[in-house]
Amino acid sequence: MKIAIIGCGFIAATHAQALTGMNLPITVAVDANLRAAQAFAEKWNIPEHTDLLDRVLEKDIDVVHVCTPPTLHYEMVRRIIQAGKHVICEKPLCLNPAQARDLARMANETGIVSAVNFNVRFHEACGRVKAAASSENFGRICLIKGSYEQEFHVLPADYMWRYQKELAGPMRATTEIGSHWIDLVRYLTGLEILEVSATYGMFTPDRFVKDGIMYEEEQPGSTKIAVDSDDAVCATLKFSNGALGSLLLSEVTCGRNNYVSMEISSSKQSVSWNSEDPYRICTASKFSGTTSSVNAFGGGFPETFASFFQEVYRDILSGKRSDRPSYPTFEDGYQNAAVCQAIYESANNHSIWTEVK
Image (tube, rainbow, N blue to C red):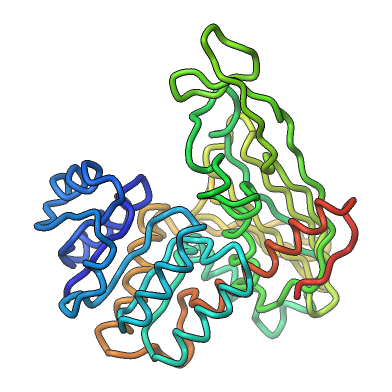
């Protein structure tokens, strides 16, 4: 089993850590910046590094982890599938739903194992939430509310690829964190999002960059830039069973490091979870108050990557994708891209209700 990683940035290190913990050695590190590839290879004891994408298409490579910015995914992944490699792609799979659909079709036709790294669904507590929401006595789901909030883009903040359209595309909160929540709600409820009405928050369109840091106010020697991607999103959702949803996405909430929340309410009861209290789920029914249950051995954020990879590599080692994989496939990546695109279209058209096509 020979594994390659393309893109040697922050998230690639998480992949490498999880693979190393599973005793799955990485054969080659690839990055457009050869020095970055070399440094990554040295850190993770990877025997080979290169800046040539074609290296991962060679016969000896079995699995490719794609850890590059999203606008680069389609062409890279398309070539990887054509070369017959199993592929694990960082989210979002694609920004263009048609491209994501094309990759899902190719993966199905070739029979390779394909997965998108929506690791949040692999919190142990999320499995318990899913079991509760799908039980016979839970009742018909009526309301879903949740959020994904972070503080990393509160100014001053790093000027990074996420602000460069040629790498990140026109969206930011929608695809960077919203895609995780969209996958999670589909996984937990089994429902699809059919329509959205969304509003974008773009709070500091003019910013000043100095020494790689963005500021709200002009700094001596700084360069002015324009930012029109979304800092935050407020969205109302309509689900396939008639349920309504409310979603808040924010990359500018002070004090929130990596906060994901979900509350699912039915005609009989409710169940909720959040990532800042990751071992606990809360359930409630009318006049009975809220009951919480904790699994102190449920793992945490780093373990979600390992759990995700373990499920994917179980199929890879068997040589084929299972009939009903627990991990998110390229089909999930396609559905996700369609929802993100609908949010973007609605937010840029006076929050008009927009069908997920």
